[in-house]
Image (cartoon, rainbow, N blue to C red; front, side):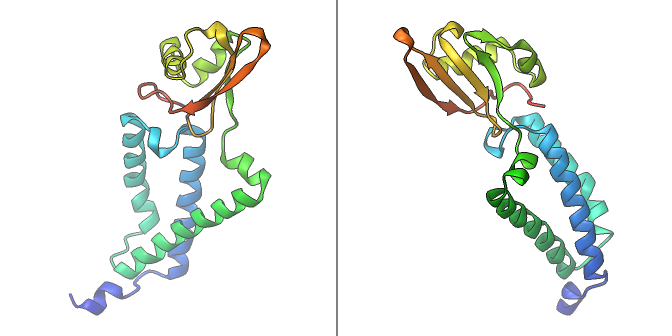
Length: 179
């Protein structure tokens, strides 16, 4: 094998771009609806899922490519879509709405919304842990608590006398899987 063989294109660049585009969009939609958290708050099962999906999608994306140039076309395609979606999300509320899950309310006026906890596979222990990290002793002390689109919790605490204070968001639970 010569150096020039490493950079030869055996597969059409258009085919590589099309394959990369199709796989990128399939994975983006899968991750948008399966994973709620950002990469900093993924647990072991989330990372394993990503690795398995990446391995499974590699063959569909590559079409049996063998050269560095073909790999670079695919990588460029994926990076290009990622950049374009970041720009579109920044500029368009509609795109942002489609790509990011809305905040999910977990507590309203001191009452837990159990349906939303079940939806995200969060236990009461997970919720209590997040409240303790925010310095809140009781669910009754919470006006509202949300699971944000990045997997972090944000809490608005009720204070005596009707005053409220915003508690900075904390990372989501390390244990439970968000789905």
